[in-house]
Amino acid sequence: MAEPRALLTVGIVDDDAFIRTALGRLVRSIGYDAAIFEGAQALLSYAGLRALSCVLADLQMPGIGGIELIQILAERVPRLPVIAMTAYPNQIIRQRALDAGAASYLTKPFEAEQLESCLKALGIGCRL
Amino acid sequence: MRQVFSRWPSLAESSAISGQESSLPAWMSASAPRHRLAATKDVACATLLILGPAAIAALAAWQIAQGDALAPWLGAIALVATGLALVFAARLMRSLRRSAEHVAAIFERAGISMWREDWTAAGEAVKALRTAGVTDLESYFASRPDELRALKAQVLIRDVNSFTLEETGAAGKEDYLGPLDRLLPETDQTFVQWLVAFGRGDRFFRSEAHITTATGREIDTLFTAMLPRDLAGFANIVVTSVDVTAYKQAQARLSAAETDAAKTSRMATANALSAAIAHEVNSPLAAILANAQAAQRLLRLPQPDMAEAGAALGDVVSQASRAKEVVARTTSYFSKATGDFAPVNLIDVARNANLLVENELRSHGAVVHLAAEDDLPLALVDAIQIQQVFVNLLVNAAQAMAGRAGKRDITLAIRSEGAQLVVDVADTGPGVAPERRATIFEPFRSSRPGGLGMGLAICRNCIDAHGGDIWVDPAPGGGAAFHFTVPIARG
Image (cartoon, rainbow over all chains, first blue to last red; front, side, top):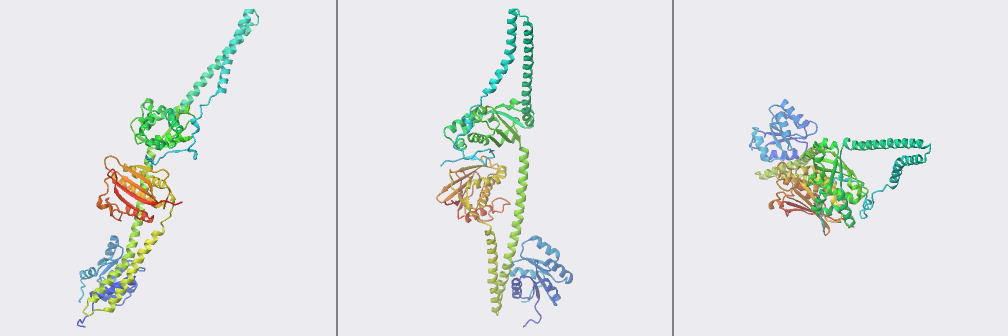
């Protein structure tokens, strides 16, 4: 490995196993490392939470929902940007996520380029 | 093929006696009752009153001539008898006057509009037609509008009560007296229903009508009349009429509010449903897209990660199946509720559909005409679905003609052709441009601002479920003509 430093890590929270696995692959293929979580609770109890560069969070999850997760993260780790995702194409949900403190918003399904430019806009360009 | 053109639905209701269509109604052969016994009694009574005293007086005169001492006594009796007869006659006159006043008071002061009408000419015409073997008077007059108009002019209003004047603000009775045709607008269809009721021998007739009052105002009325039992009775038919204009307006407002509420509720359901379907389909699509793009990138690496790309493609396949299942589940859920096929009369289905949207059609100024074959075979259809097809086509036609000058006619024709029934719904609107005809039945193709564009797509869906066809071409009059076919019920 020519690169001495570790890759930036993107945390992915989604209750849909296929989506979180797929997003993990996509994030890695773009050039980040990915940490995958099946729910908000798993992310919040993750030891390396503060080392994450960004969190990609689904809004519709059982237990602690996406909006609540965004609020908790905004309080605990204010510097950690959260990109909210939902499969409901709805402006109100989008506004709620942004109001809760989400840095950005993606409607599923989204293209790799959309995710990439979203991450770049947050100032966490990859090093590949 | 005999065609029946009329504006419908008829709002007439009557005491129809079914199953006796062919036999002549009783009033045609009945003669006015003769009160022979009562007349004999009256003559006897009058005779007693006048001849009694006269006989006694004559007897007294004879006795005077004979020089009988009893003569003055008999004269006195004759005088008393004459006096009694006078008193009796006076009381009779008074009671007669009171009785007449009483009847007049009931007629004049009743809180309901009452009309005395002379329908003799109509009664005679109906009798002549029925005797000549005409059974379907509605069709007969539908093809002879001038004959009908002439008959309408021969119905005479003889009297109206004070309440009629109060209610309509007319200056005097003479504003109403005379031929009926002045009060009925040209579009009136209730007049022919009267003749039908006569021809059937109904005991009473009730219908809604749209009339023009003496002050020129158009009102909706509900009128009722007992029908005569003999031809002589046609000279004096008492018709009561209730002004239901305000009631009908309130009803229309209520129905519009209900329609709005139902529309809102349908839209809310559709929104929730489309959001749920979008979520269920978008989730596997998200996984497919992410996996596919990850695989592309993994394969483009200087050292392609074949294992991970293979896993990603495996997930693409499984998630594509998941999306397919969502769609299959949704369609099977909705197709479960459809298809209650039974033999039904398509005219009834069309009539019900017309009643459902009557207010909307009227608000666009559209008039619906029905043209159907005699002895139309039953159709094997899901009545609710076909009713929806009629509703959508009628409303579409009315909306297409809204605001246009000239006639706004919707002609609905039903005929049998081989093993199918063919329905035409033609309007006098702007028509459908040739390039739009092929795609007009696809969803989301509305040409109306704010329209969702599902109406015709729903029609095609329903007709597809019946194994029929639906298409559009230009109507002979220049508007659009929509056609659809449904199967005829066998056996």
